[in-house]
Image (cartoon, rainbow, N blue to C red; front, side, top):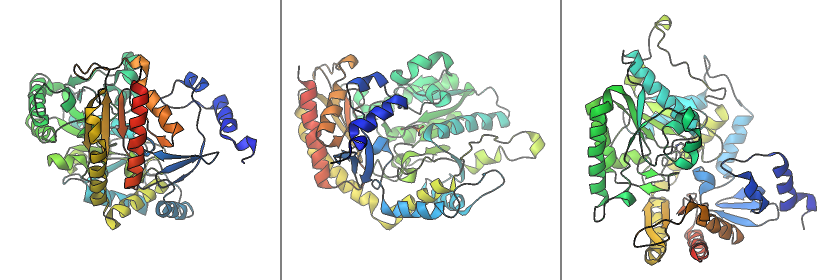
Length: 454
Ligand SMILES: *Cc1c(COP(=O)(O)O)cnc(C)c1O
């Protein structure tokens, strides 16, 4: 037995004395246990008392190749003994150079310049500021607004939150935020009855066109999460929307910002989701899986054309003077390089396609469930929409916290699933096995039965 001071309860009590956790009403922990994790191994997390939890959500969508992945850990240890950090203005280092070369090589054509930041929200801030500043440098200071999609999520810092449309996170801070122009999401679940996802995308593009006709002159960029609006409830849409969006952005002279922070690095079936629309954005934001879930790092890729608009004699005052202390951190860059090396050395996308097909087969029976309105999937993201009434798609009231019951049931039975409201979803690490997928689905089904009862 563990010594009592190392028990789950003892660690949780110490935690709750001082630590304030993200995205949490801390009062919940009067009834919900805080779980101290001491170790990770592949797709599994292990708590202070040796209990194991299958990580069905890649620890908030960051982990690709398993916890404590030995190959990535070794690369990190070696880098830590060589160079842990150096100021990134005026100085550079090989991990950052090689990572930029590699990112340019693997992302869609035309993205030639890499600006580093240290988390997803910061990457969004960089893209928004760069887009605005590009137009300003070209003499178009009247372009000050952004178009975002309804149901979008781009992060929690004030700029990123400004272009997000998830009320739970945004509403409270609305008085502090920029006001984006909202274009209706091409979300297929929200389509008209009888409409195909492709038709929904086409109709939503028409609505975006009319918004641009009125507002392009004051608009810097359209920002989207390609293919899957993740935090907004894993809402999915047809890739035609991306193709059409690229054409509209060109026609109306506004930038296209692709936030691939959650969907990048193989999650949707292709290395980047934009590939499925056959498009290159003007800005691509990457983070989360970039380091395989080891360290915070993000990158904003953009074009030579954008770069050139900032390139001038110092006194022209056109430089992009944004920075973060840990910009281009060598440890994070080295770990990202090792993550990308795994994509090169192993048939990751092929294996993901097989896992996705297996997951899809296992979820099929849920379509008939009386409280399931939709089962949707894009690559290794699958989501189940729970409703109070199937015919009318009437949602369960948020206050009933049905998703929380699925979460608690999962933890009692060794799986980590963390529904977004009434949406139960799966986003497992790529090292998950078929048997582990079976376990996740079985636990989810039982959790759902529990959650919809009474
Ligand atoms: C998570 C996320 C962000 C924010 O990234 P953080 O590292 O949490 O700041 C931005 N955009 C999308 C699509 C995300 O999923």
